[in-house]
Image 1 (tube, rainbow, N blue to C red):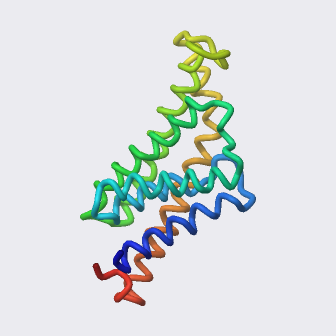
Image 2 (cartoon, rainbow, N blue to C red):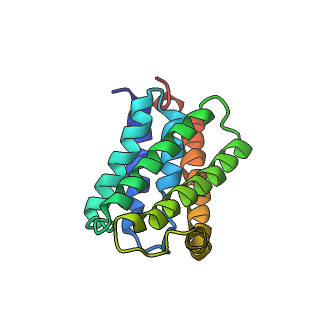
Image 3 (cartoon, rainbow, N blue to C red):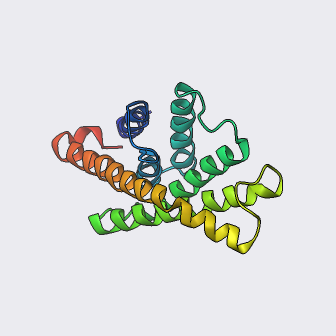
Length: 178
């Protein structure tokens, strides 16, 4: 394995480990990790698999907090896979504007997909919300405070990961050569 892949993987694991530190609900490195992996791993399978494995590992260390709702846990993992694929769009343009835009877009994608799944779970589980249009709207409205923290976490960790990698590439360029 080359130095660049090891560096990217190390940064991802370090960011994933930060989930073990006290933090506000939904302020997480996962969106930033997925975007970063998609942007920097040249192999598509690595850009999806490594952030999901980092998430599984950190979830295991936290006792799988979403295990009571396996369908939702799967949805969260799948959504981060989608975000990693979105990150691949950054491979040739890692400007601050593009990274910020992708971070915002990933927060929106996560919000829309996961909250839709919370609402839809009423079809086969004890419903949190009625499976009506009004129930769907209520689900999204009640999730807005969580969106704010997700957006802040995605922007913060994207900045740390992309910025950190950029600083390393300037100061220790031999670590980022393939």
